[in-house]
Image: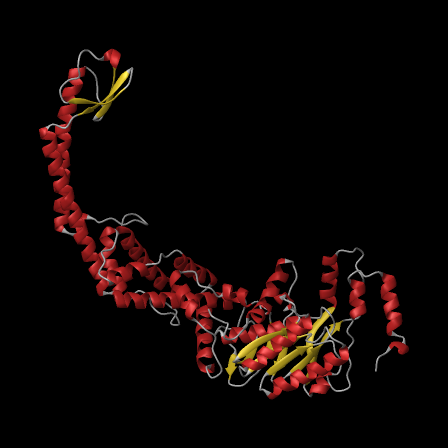
Length: 538
């Protein structure tokens, strides 16, 4: 799926778009071709985006996980018959390997329709062309995964093979008599037409009809020579073999003609097969992560309850921890503040991830959601340090922001994570306030996580905050970082709530430093400095 029209590379990385595309990826070559042509839905395509998401949700609802896995396994094991169909369309005679691919494909079509027959959201792939090809090739089935040009395909093929068998028997009889005569003359048994005679056993010259192939000091390698009768029998056998080859070629041509006749309908079947593969992959994602169909609306909004950032949730699950779902109602630009490690970046990523899912036409990982379609989803600030080059972190952020504004893909969803954090707080605040105002004026939704104070008030936007620590947690007895993180997760309230005018939130930074094992003397000194009014900056 091509998402570059919606996300640049750095934004895609920040929102784990590669992981999402892998999770939504099909397993068959037909699905891969369909998936490669898919693009995100654009503003104005709200109805088809919601329709596709409902279609995916319907599949997830009607098929149990075991049935979805069985369908996926059927699609994963199918060979690519596209080349064979294309060759037949051009008039080429197909090989036995091509015909086996077709037989396995039509088998998979019938199996897939059986597994998904009660799901109206999936197209039937076994159309009349598939059944016609199956009926034609069925006589060549050899075991579970084999194909053979059986005599039943054509009477002249059966007759040619019978004639070849007779000619082979006649040739074998003639050669057998020659071998028997040589064996009697040498007084020994001969197996096959080539044999060794030890010189010490040889009495006189070799008998008639036996010639020397190679000589050695102690033996001679001999061969039964072909006499006139043998040569005549061999000629008859070769002519019979040529007739068999011609008959087989005729059968392959006839079978290829059947495929050519139904090529257009077979192409339609492969397209439906690929589409089903893509839809089943999306349904598996929706089922696995308990996704719901978002209300896709024609205005810039990202609103959800119990939203989950799935890549992080899976990572936490592997560590024996759990993700705390969050709720957010973002209908205009807003600022998000809160403690370090309080989930601000995760909140931004959840917002972008849900918007991305909606744009891809799949259900979103939330209990309820209302989402608009965006011209661009962009991540700015922390998390884009990997660009390298000669520019500083701040310069790289500014250049990316410049490029986003120059592209002007509206409406945009801009996720700013600690933007301008590497300059002075005073100038950083001024820049973020100005950026929020500019993005808002351009019709974008900007969601900015920051530790800078007064940004929301300065930009005139809503102010959200993570509630933060429920008191100061006890420091673990050991310096085990894993234990500290578990204590932090248990003590942190990740709820996002709107901050009313005049409210203040503590960043809990010193408490977190203590929890993570910073020397207690440093922690105590930091608290003393925090309580010293002389150090406050107005």
